[in-house]
Amino acid sequence: MPARIRTKSAVYKIEQNSDINVTPFVDVMLVLLIIFMVSIPVATKAVKLDMPPPKAGATGKTPTFISIQGPGDLYIGSQKTSLAQLDADLRAALQSQHPLEERVLVRGNADIEYDAFMQVLNELNAHGYTRIGLINEDID
Image (cartoon, rainbow, N blue to C red; front, side, top):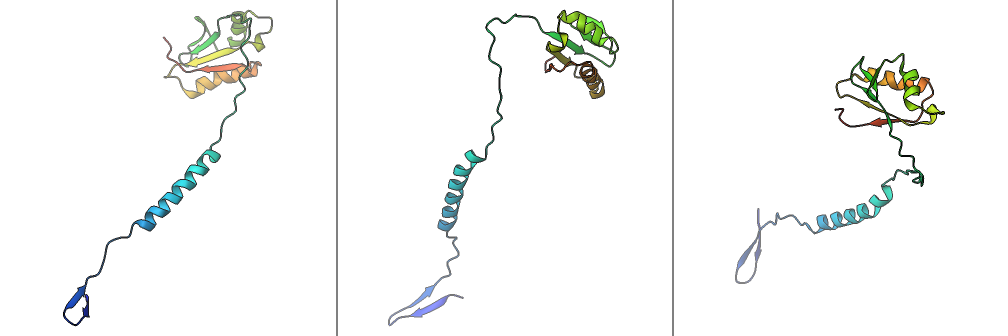
């Protein structure tokens, strides 16, 4: 109910003000904005990568690819092999005095099961190959 104020000559009605005062809201938002702007750069974490420097006398040797195209379709380059013969065929394909120090790149078809992919990686690891790279590209 509006209040009435009487003066000598007139009666004034004082209406209730229901507008929201946004000034405190804006003040709080600006303070939060400043806090986030200061704290976000501190909270970000960077991943440190130690990349090897480029070698001056890089050999330009073509990488050796192991392609997994299905559960029984395993290829070293374009030569078909099996999981049992993988180590022997890979050593022949690498043609190196130290085959365990060579980088081997593994790529798999999108249709293969995870188990088939991991069997190849476990087989390589069991024979001592630790420099294994994974390739993410389509197989032609």
